[in-house]
Every structure is written in C-alpha cells, then in structure tokens.
Length: 76
Image (cartoon, rainbow, N blue to C red):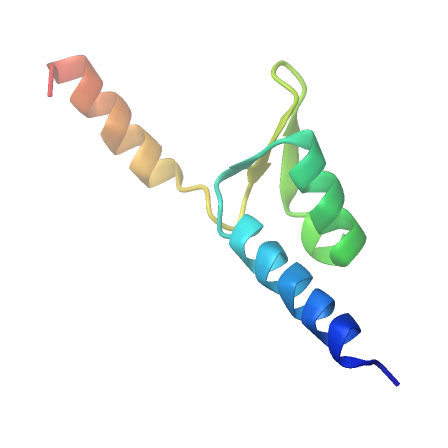
C-alpha cells in the first residue's frame, strides 16, 4: 500500500504527464518521461530527427499550421 508521500509523488507525476501531453512539441527529456509513464500514449509522439524534438500528433493541427503559414505569406 502506498503512503501519503508516494501518493503525492504519483499525483505530481500524473499532473506533469498530463501537462506534457497537452504540449505540441516536447524535448528529449519530456519524451522520455512520457514514454516511461505511458509507452502506448508515447507512440503518438513523432520524432523530428533534424532538431531532436517530438511532435505530439494528438495536439498538432495541420489546419492551424496552414492558417499560420497563410497569414505569414500575406503579411499578417
């Protein structure tokens, strides 16, 4: 059975996991943390080898990227 300190630690780690999994781009350390916490969920993180980051496919939106690119092209 878990003591109060272990419960608190687990809650903190879960909160960090949830926060990280709501980000669009993760670094190597964040990826490793998420992978250790939930390897299945970490499969949705695409590795960008050119800059060693991970793109969260659950959060990333191609539509938002295209809208941003269009605004940049037309000068907004």
